[in-house]
Image (cartoon, rainbow, N blue to C red; front, side, top):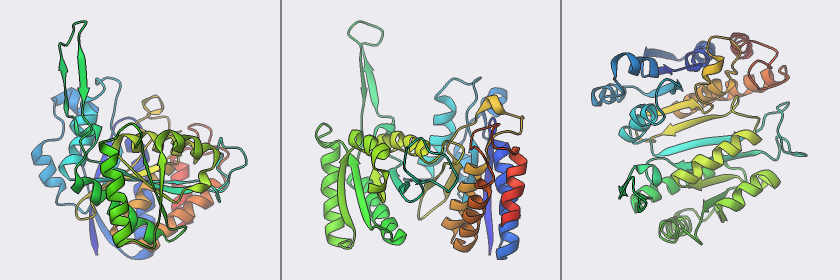
Amino acid sequence: MTYKIAVIGGDGTGPEVVAEGLKVLKAAAKKHKFDYQLEEFDFSGKRYLKTGELVSDKDIEKLKQFDVIYLGAVGTPEVKPGILEHGVLLKIRFALDQYINLRPVKLYPNVWTPIKDKGPAEIDFVVVRENSEGLYKGMGEFQNKGTKDEVAIQVSYNTRKGVERCLRYAFEYCRKRNKRKQLTLVGKTNVLTYAFDLWERTFHEVGGNDYPDIKREYSHVDATCMWFVKNPEWFDVIVTDNMFGDIITDLGAMIQGGMGIAAGGNINPEGVSMFEPIGGSAPKYTGKNVINPLAAIGALQMLLDELGEEKAAADIENAIITTVAKMPSMAAGKMGMSTTEVGDVVAANI
């Protein structure tokens, strides 16, 4: 089997951490005897500043020919916020219909968490975020812009189809994960009475009819933020909309040890998925060889798991666990090793 992998290094430290991920990929492929082909795409702030180009429809058609996409980071201070996010990241996610954002929140042994008296046994859950609708759909308008009567309207757009396919993915994932077999819908039914009425009704209809083995729970998003800190062990798999998912997964990253360890996937189960570290481009660390590549390596683990190389993915996770035991901190410049040395150790541990 030869996998076609599109590589987007991107901006800042993105290319540095991707390089370490590819080092680990090489070791895993050698051990587990699979082949892969890489092709690099320069979708970056540097390219935009030079050419004015972002991701075109032609680029999307080319990306559709790959099995998966491996992304470093996109974003640079020289480009106004929103341009690269919409012109690269959201363009790819929406055009490839990557309707699931998958975010494991897992604390590894020997990794510090700010949550007192909680450890790996308590912090181990997954957030399934709807990734193509909601407030991020970009629907809205200004009225009387620039006047004292200005109104800004942003629409949360939720369809039965979009909500149901996200929920079904979450139920299936919960069943496959096979831990507590508990799926928690996170929303705000007491205020967002249209959007989350649809979410809640569909949640119970789909769960009751097709997933009777999965326990269903509901939590308001504000209460969820409290319980992430107070009782993270209450959660197994969480499913939520685009905006709330974006917010609570950053909190999840902090309780699992920080942005240096947190990875995520933008998934189209029937198409091309994209995997990335969630910490961003971290431009102040560019070229210093001090950024933590473990989140990018964790994203590679998720990428291989999605491809069906489950044994290779498990080996990478075990190699990460072995590596963090030797690291005093997950923070950039405080790891006790350089970026390249961390990659070397993980690859050796494969």
